[in-house]
Length: 468
Ligand code: ADP
Ligand code: MG
Image (cartoon, rainbow, N blue to C red; front, side, top):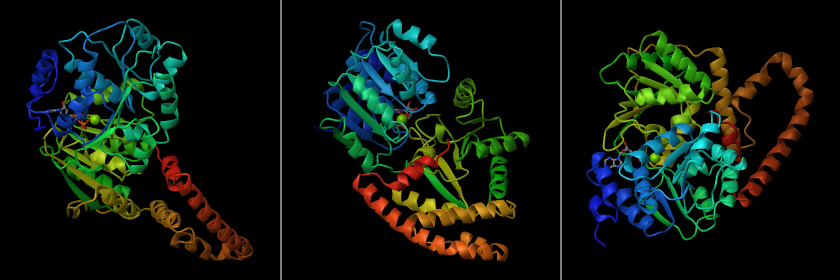
């Protein structure tokens, strides 16, 4: 089969082709070229391609083609995505592509009462786009007919199958008709997730445009060693003073607290317009912030990893990682908010000493070294506060101990050398030596056991440790 280079060559109807042309898509992207014929052919698919390469249309077009027109009242295709912002965006995309058809598309998500959404479902839906939570909630109320579902898409599939969502997903699989076509898409798809997907996929075809976790090639990455939060803030101020280049910026932080702090600072310094998104923000506030950012009303959007995945905003000039994400895959997704649809973009990552450890892991994941740059001279380097120093030292120790359970660590040694505690500690030491041995032994065994059961202890910790 010769390579497909135009949309006309797919087996799509005129209505869809006209919509594609209205969107200004001239050529199918590689993931679209490879996936569309397979999905039209009825096969299950795992689609892996870099961020911003049109994975959405790669499944929406063939799904719309198969759904064809409005029929009955019950949904025939379900698309699941991890956040409400993404379900809304996917529905918008689907509506644009189906505008010359009568296909009914409905997004449902949490944060607001289910009443209106239930009424909408009752009026008839062909393609339902949902978060797992809201899907389950409405299903349990007996208000979600699922018998007609023939296609299931998991967008951001690896995120959907992580420990936060998988139990819920399994329940959804149970209620959906067994005979259905499953389609999984993401830019990252670790091996252990692929193994997990064997639970419900039947002979899937894997389309891998680039190996999983390849960073988008249009994104120029830069790494800066920044010793502490205060200096990170100074650096942000310095960068945002350059209004011409830094015209549409997403800043990611690991914690809600940092997101709020960065947001407050930017607002106080009049470097916005700026808004902030995290899981404690109300439904309206979150959706409005994304909309305003998409409409170009905001210069800066500060956010935790809730918006790291899927959100498609054109011409984001820069992504700034105020800190390093705990889930390493999220690095790929964060920086992938820029450099979308053939545009260029820049991603700057700030790391303190404790975070260097994570950067090494991220570099391993993306199979490239992030070029290091030095902080411009104009940025004032602040002294690290006592608390932050302690936190950084503790963090480094914790990591090392995780890698080597017998590791004692500089941070804890220092504590123990404090004279006053020493006496009391002496007695304890005997116990704690034995404890340490036992712990080391246990954790070694646990690691073995975990390995055997296919789950690594580190993953539990990783999951527990994440705040979004
Ligand atoms: P991904 O899911 O791979 O990260 P998206 O599906 O969100 O990427 O698409 C990224 C952007 O590219 C969107 O704005 C989309 O409209 C645009 N796009 C998709 N397909 C094409 C195409 N064939 N030509 C041009 N732009 C496209
Ligand atoms: Mg996507």
